[in-house]
Length: 478
Ligand SMILES: Nc1ncnc2c1ncn2[C@@H]1O[C@H](COP(=O)(O)OP(=O)(O)OP(=O)(O)O)[C@@H](O)[C@H]1O
Image 1 (tube, protein in one colour):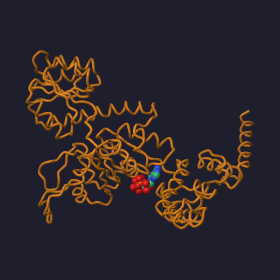
Image 2: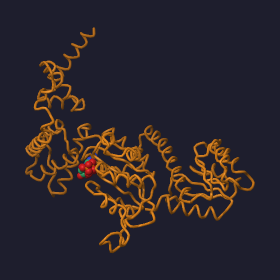
Image 3: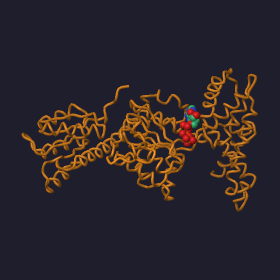
Image 4: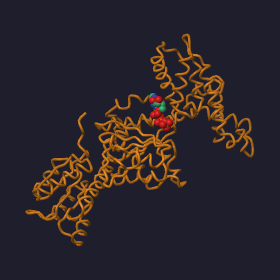
């Protein structure tokens, strides 16, 4: 796969000094990975270039022959308000800087400032442009409803509208270099989404996963940033870290909610500054990798509780994907069941068994705290143990029973012993009847025959109850 130009819009450098254009182009490419570059020595050509190319950012020198930079700045802002302009001037004059900012410049640097500062300023402007473009892109894709890379989501079996919205969002943010945060309960498919983000991004390198849970700060830094020779006793060789390994690809940091406070600071610095120090190094390295992070924790709650840094949380939240638990997309259960039956039969070299009719009802009534991973394990176990043509219900009943007992044991001490213990007044039989019917319909996603099965009554009995209730409500309103 060939490397795709970055960013997805051109950065135009305008200066009459060819030497400055060359040095700046090299710095931007080396430090920020910017390859989508245009250069121009004659300010009179700039408006034409903006008309012909998709430019997102202009670095503009102020003192050039033929056309004063300030005048050109005004023309650009008027004709292309969506383009950001950074003024890089030879003059260290406060008044000029103020005038340029008032005219609509995104930032102002003096040429003699450290090159590093200008590069970081360009990094900030690129990030702003990316966010603005992604906002437009997200709006367009939601209206359009089509996926451009459906193959990237092939491994994710779903017919759920929220999951499809996630796919469209992933496509909309895929070309950016900003981090993507994937949240959702354990087993909901966060790693599959991280892989899809990587695939859609078209980045040539590999996806490098690192589980950061339980890493102490030193191991975290060494794993991610590597070390130079002699950095600590036993460091006989220099070793590059995962950030380097993922340079042309994607770094996937899993279990980010469990990161220690000291490592949170390091990660924030990496994301904010785009640079890091291998252990023992005295010069920073630039990060080229795209970062995707995932957690099953509620980061907002962790942030509020003071265990997760707010600045890191807000930084990560810019591109956020949340995966709904399986119990909120029960319509996916039959599809996943088929998918895992195929997979299990293939892996175990068996003929695909037929699922018994009652299985759908049993699975629909279960909360799946372990989500898709739990369903997959159940199906694999059941197919492994099964003989004959029709799959036995027993393996599923046992797995669900055991999981519920384990779950109950986990909750013991916190949860009330009976569902009514916390209530001041127990519901009347009629009210309980009503509550059960509502809950069954909710769990069955409004499917009445499934809801009836959950309630242990026939579909016509449920339909009669619903009809009677509607009539009673009608009379009350009338
Ligand atoms: N929609 C899906 N279609 C097919 N397989 C799925 C789907 N969602 C999850 N899986 C499978 O379920 C298992 C768990 O998925 P994954 O590892 O992506 O979950 P996770 O959210 O990252 O979990 P954790 O938080 O525990 O790391 C994997 O075997 C994965 O292939």
